[in-house]
Amino acid sequence: MSGAPGYPLFAVGYSLFGKPKVQPQGWALLHNRELAEASMVEHIVGMNIEQNKAVLERVFWHVVGIVNMIRRTGKNTSGQDIAWQEIGTGVACRFMERKLILTAKHVLEHAGDDDLRFLPRPSGRIEWADEPIRTRVERVPFPIGRIVRCQWEDLAAIVLKPEPTEIANVRFCDLPKNFGQVPTEGVLLVIGYPYDQAFIEQISQNEGSKVHNLSAKSDGFRSEVVKTNKLLSGFDEESHFLIKFYPSFEGERPDGYSGAGVWDEEHKETEETVWSATPKLTGIQTHAYRESGLLRVVKAEVMLKFLEESVGAGKPPGAI
Image 1 (spheres, one colour):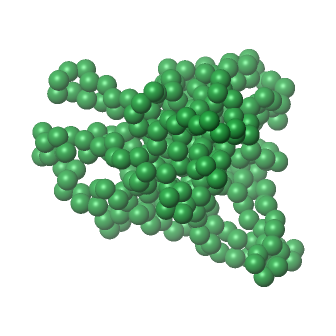
Image 2: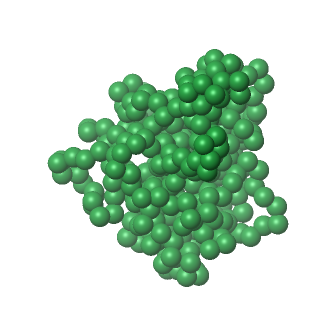
């Protein structure tokens, strides 16, 4: 079921950085699991639910939380010094036989190979809120070969070392095969690690500052492409498109979705009774225009240009 844009449909899984504690909230429209049973498939509502679950499962395999261990510093409302670690989102991809995590460049600000940790999906399937046992997962290192930062766009690629073993609960989306064009209509899916869903798990002291160790839940929303006549800083219609951040109506902020993939829920039917989920990656979300409630997305063709110029050409300038 596509769902009406404007309602955050689910909170899939619960990863964390900090102490392990996982407690997924589940998907608001699937609180009654009986609706998703196979016996409902022949009913149109049941079919929509099955399709929707398949799309969520397919996309969530490619979603990775990114923790930048370089601490940001500031002051709390009492004027006390505090420090925290930023979180963003990435997309697990494979390009020219290289496995990599695509994200927004600013998510990796000041970070080197040893300064990043990752949040894969907690288990081999989405665990809904009414399930009595849920998987716990902690932030983990990935085998980073190099980090490539785009010189002309807010994009970066974390290129992984070729390893004989797979990374648990991560599947790599083949590019450019699974790139998609910006749709003129229909619903787009975004899954990420919004900062609003993080909470303080542990507070420690470090050189006179309080350090907040946070736990993070994955979440998502559905949206659509929008047009505007407003002059938006940094927006280039040739390279970017805009989507509406509908959770802002609920008071939520877009922080943490930076680097998240924006997926077109393209469906493929090979026969009348055979259906498969084939979501396409249309872009990477990189910037929020808070006053207008819009998000800027870098188009797939721009991402392809970046990958061809950098990852596909060996070690480029800007790699570390």
